[in-house]
Amino acid sequence: MHKYIGVCLLALSMSSCQDYLDRPVVSDVDEERVFTDYNLTYQFVNDLYSYRIDEYRGANTTNGDIGTVSFLGAGMLASATDDSKYSELSSPVNFLNSGNWTPSYNPANIWSDMYSAVRKANLFFENVDRMVLETYDEPIRDNSELAPDGNLITAEQLKTRLTGEVYFLRAYYYYELIRRYGGVPIIDQTYELGDEVNSTRASFEACVNFILDDLESARPLLPENYNYYQANKGRATQPMVDAFKAQVLMLAASPLHNSGNDLDKWQAAADAYKEVIESGAYSLNNNYDRAFVRNQGSPETIFEIIYFNRNDIERNHTPVGYEGGGGGINPTQDLVEAYEMADGTAFDWNNPVHAAAPFDNRDPRFYLSILYNGADWRGRPVESYVGGLDGEGVNGATLTGYYMRKFMDPELDILRDQRSTKNWVILRYAEILLGYAEAQNEAVGPDASVYDAINEVRDRAGMPALPEGLSQDEMRAKIRHERRIEFAFEGQRFFDTRRWKTAEDEFNGPVHGLRITKSGDDFEYDVIEVEDRVFTEKMYLFPIPQSEINNTNGNLQQNPMW
Image 1 (cartoon, rainbow, N blue to C red):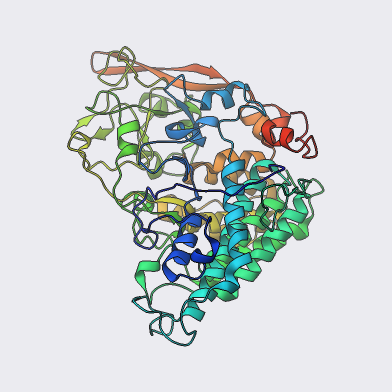
Image 2 (image 1 turned 120 degrees about the vertical axis):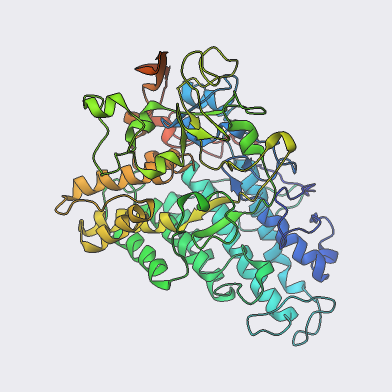
């Protein structure tokens, strides 16, 4: 954190066209005016939502235009894992893969954005009691918003709810910090010009407790849902708080931060996930694809950034042989081989049936996530073979033999600038189910509830249930595999392999592609090395930005080995 902090004037605009957040942005310069005016107070909190992280675009504060990306941009965190290669060789994501990121240059750094959000939250708390909006027991003038009781919302009800939202948001932003940097400075007040800030890093455990305290403070101030006033859907709720509590406890229980394998930590995470499951607040979408595309109102979504009209994903990632296609994300052969056969068995090149038709009879999620040679897309088969319309020899063609399918709407004509709803989902119910399965398996082993949770996810995908009688180690491997498939390209693997401390094995070496050559009506397949990756022990945690170290005269301690 900077040693000296001045007044921050934010000039931000919402890129996602939210109804409930679609208001002008308010700076915090004129505090008295902001916190004594209903509209400006509401806008101030709305602006605090704008720091949420879209793993496709990066932190949501850098630029208000859809398609204008920050840090990794269209490369996505998935391309900093063994799941994909980004075809634009100059992309910043390549610094993460080559090991050439440093405290002075980390293209995935979020430190400044998150602490800007924390500062705004702290400013709210310091001024919330100055909110003199209306007579507290009367409806707010010129406002049609409803309260949970079905009547027009009063100023007292609004103050209560907004306070809960800000507690939740501050907890969320600290969660994003600690899963990247570990323990960070806990800043719970604002500072003026000339004030010296305590920049000492708190322990990871202290940060977890601070986040949990904020979530506990938020919960009783929030509604269970917004069914009574649909325009507010997407704002913080009690079940949302419970879901993030489980996520925080899972991070704390995982090997990166639980070297002694304290089973009580795993049980606490399992209990928190179970509470969300038993609440009935969320359920899996019947259609896997609809969790990502045209996904407004999905019962699976817990926390999201709403984009009513976008086609930047299609422009960036449609295969290059289609007009307007950028061919960006190229899934690796490593990921493709991880998709099981439809009967639940593993794909195997040594199986002559598999080798002859490697894209037949695979997990249904494969077809909704990967564009492979011969896949039907927008009126013709994808041609990713050498010399094909989308293959080697075409400028910008795939480097792996594949293109990403997930998140893309096949019904859009991007040349006519057609757009559709594709909300970026920060947290969804499938993660609650698989989180419960993981935590419960670690705490007590693969009991029936573990099978139930993972099989619910598999059943929605059209995959068979796991075989009975798995050992704890075998179930752990199955759960980790299921997470890789279910959450492909969503960013989870980037963090999962870090919290599991497996990234040195998973990411330190080559990633592979498939070179496809056509001979008559037949194809030949050769697995090739696409790129050699580097991952060393220090990379389990991000480096603290060097500028922050410098601004504290070294009082802010750097992460080990950076």
